[in-house]
Length: 171
Image 1 (cartoon, rainbow, N blue to C red):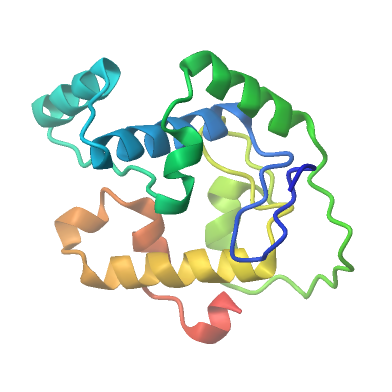
Image 2 (image 1 turned 90 degrees about the vertical axis):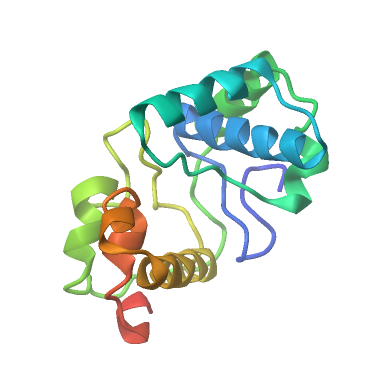
């Protein structure tokens, strides 16, 4: 949406998100879009070399719907978009009823903050995201976590955290 609030609750809201987080996500989507198109940017080659050298798994963001939107963005365009959306209010116009915080939320608060606003520049805010989007992401992370070996789980924090969640925990 023009105000950074997604028109559909399966998509993330960008309004109020940290600029540094948005830069990383958009850059990752651009990298994936270029790879699908058979192109490789020099900065992506550098990242892959570092990845191989230091033996870590680089988790990229991929969304085929976004390919045509991000494929030609320059770094300056990405920084400008991130700055714009980070300045918008994450308050939605939807009526919100906030239930009592579930016991499992303590895991979320450790990284994403007590009120869903992360203190870290690389950890996304959960505040302002729709229930449907958060439920979908947690379900996807849970499935990834169940399929990963113990060694791989250590590299994917969200999959490790979500793999033991039950449906009612996610709800």
